[in-house]
Amino acid sequence: MTTKSILVLGGSYGGTATAHYTLKHIIPKLPSPDSYQVVLVSPSREIIVRPAFPRALIADSYFDQSKLWTNLEDQFKQYGSKFRFVHGVATSLDHEARTVTVTQKTGAEVTVEYHALVIATGSSTPSPLLSLNGGGRDEVKAHWTAFRAALPNAKSIVIAGGGPVGIETAGELGEHLNGRAGFFSSKLVNPKVKITVISKDKDILPVVRPALAQTAEGYLAKVGVEVVKNVGVESVSPAEAGRASDVTVGTEVKLSDGKTLQADLYIPAYGTTPNTSFVAESLRAKDGRVETNPKTLRVDKAGERVYAVGDASNYARPAVHIMMDAIPVLAANLKRDLLIAVGQTPSGDERLLTADEGETQLIPIGRGKGVGAFKGTRLPSFFVWLFKGRDYFVGMSGGMWSGQNWAKET
Image (cartoon, rainbow, N blue to C red; front, side):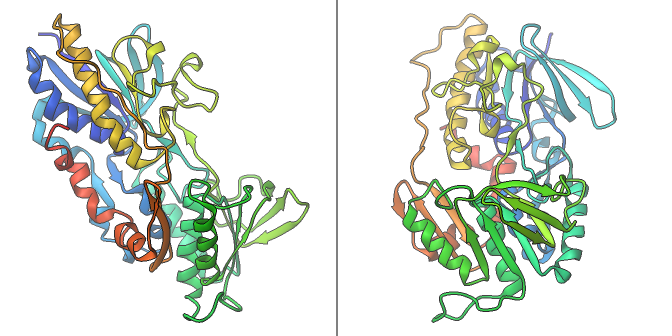
């Protein structure tokens, strides 16, 4: 009996969720279920709670490390031979031959034929402090160790980027290094470490309303963080400062207004790059993400039974809550397409996604404050702390990684 591979590229939120959902709710309901296997490809053997990195990079003591890092393969042992893990990176997709070439961590190349394909390879950050970026736990921990060793001697830190990750990182470093101003003080006077956030936009946190952004600036001021807006970073010297080559090098930061800042530590936190270099340019949008039908999650140009979700896809803005809404839609259409492939006519219509592109975002600022909104409703600082700021969702990740969150078909 020929095995039909449902190939999932990516071992983080989108990839693991799709794999669990497929194994629990799709394959068992197909004719000849034993003829299908989910093959998951990931460059890391471990799953990480990436949203927690702004706090986790400062000290191991802030989190239970057994929950921050989770062995990926262990989460899928429950499925036996219906699941296979490939430790490597997708380096080439031939959507006409329906194969993906994977360079394994051993250096060997393997070609995987797919019956269905899900691209959930995510994105990489400019700073290796804030994401796996194709590496593993040891590589990230090495960068964190170097950064932590440099912190006690740092007098100035520049963070480029006024989005959630940049603001969260600034807030965590500010409170860790400077403490927090008293209740009646609007700002921390004479902070031990000068921390500056550079934002090219007129307001930080562009997804939320300006009033929330202004509140965030106030919270940052209380931990000794200054925000400079409407100014971009023109260049840094050395050119690779803050990146994988050296996260601790002293940096000269030239700004678009002609000013120059000197930083003992520089963190580029101004965007992400989709991990899609293995995908043909004809299948990618201008921003590099995979061109995806925003309603069905299919990659229409790639042929039958090809889908994309998460940061690697352009179906919606990158956001975990949008992706969680998308998984059942992708899965329903995958199931439908698999049934059609064996000559069956599925009942009902295909499932369509309506992405929540509204004001939903939670941004902790330090270990006790935060700003945020849920579906357009402003949340008090206490609720932002309660839902996210306590542990950046680390305590909630177990059910995601083990598949318990997908115990029921939705």
